[in-house]
Image (cartoon, rainbow, N blue to C red; front, side, top):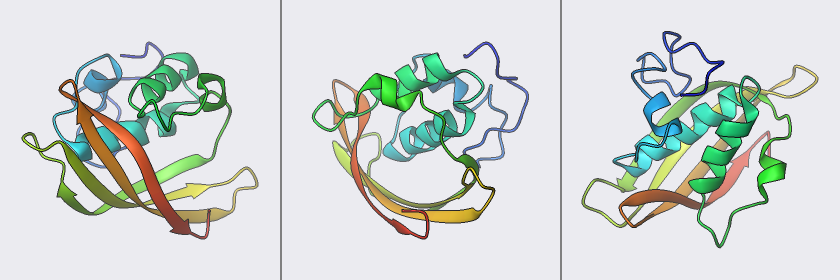
Length: 143
């Protein structure tokens, strides 16, 4: 678990569990069992990135499909302040599937403090027993 993140704080992914009981295990190397769990853990990594950028950026990088993955350095740049995640729905992406989608809405504030929302349908695939983010279709007032 990244050292500068309090494991007792509520996890940003919206499950209601503490970070230590939720996404920290994936950020520390555990495999997410479903596409939704991976999506939630990636959201948490973005939400917590300012607290421990290097390990969380590496997590985002290694959970991104190699064909679509951006450079690691770009993932460590400051981003918006993520506020709330709402899962709209999932298609497949379970423990016995090889692909799936997760539709979500994420609310955030940009550098000026203005509020935005991003709606995405993310695509995932499983390789070697691990889920990977492939790409997503994004819409909203923050795109």
